[in-house]
Image (cartoon, rainbow, N blue to C red; front, top):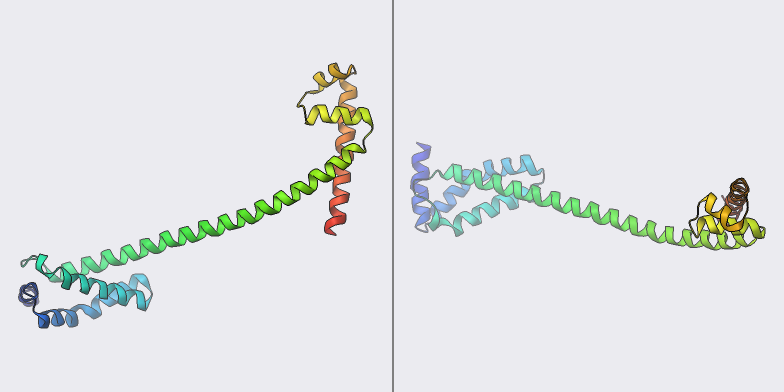
Length: 187
């Protein structure tokens, strides 16, 4: 019986009968709203979803099949609209999260660049305080990328001496940088 009424309402709607549209609206609005609200959990969004479906129904009334199920059309339309809203919200949330992350990374990058610059300045000052041979070993290892054997051959000293001088230089620099940074930050 209900399906027969819907067929008549649908037929009249296709012809542009506003009373049929109002009847359909009154008959299905609350059920469609409950379905939309169930998934969206937001009254304004659920109301907008129902409104959009009814606007689409009116705008596309001439394209509707007279033999089709009005109820099926409306509930499929509301389901699709709700899924689109949820999908759009997910994309918006992902974009928001990504932008927030990128802003944090940018802030960290700036802070890291400043810290790195401070470390480099301290390092340069520190390296100049090393004895000449130790400084030469350190520079050949770190700046030139030579290994212990190559540094030993270049400076005509033993590999053991290179290792020892490099170790002492590294310890001195770590301690000096730590003291300097602690002084500046007060930690």
